[in-house]
Image 1: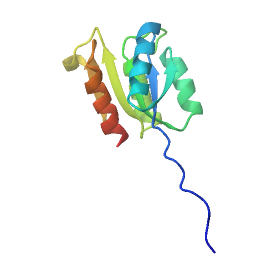
Image 2 (image 1 turned 90 degrees about the vertical axis):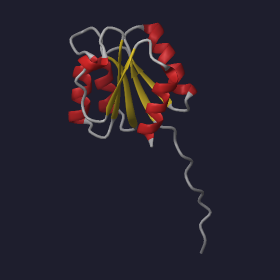
Image 3 (image 1 turned 135 degrees about the vertical axis):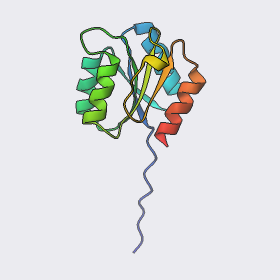
Image 4 (image 1 turned 45 degrees about the vertical axis):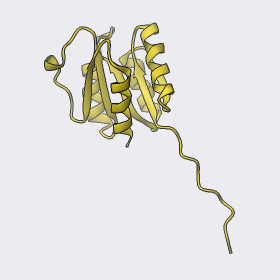
Length: 128
């Protein structure tokens, strides 16, 4: 007896983009989608946490460090590493330099304005 089932098509890896500036968020989402990933958007860390609690398919979080409403990108990264250890983290900031950033394990930092090619390369490396 043979099966007519086809192998499932490979789904695109999902990247959660967390950025409070709408124009920068749109630009980051375009970069993520142009690189072949599926993008999910959050305007702040609180919204990002709600999304992470509902979606089990997010593999990478690309987040700004400087965000309003109490939870910045560094706190978000620490929370992700604690609650969702398999998720990879990419942090960015236009106000902080790399030597000043204490990052969780398996994370990368890019200063703004970042080189999109380098960020995409990091996402692809994280996506395996």
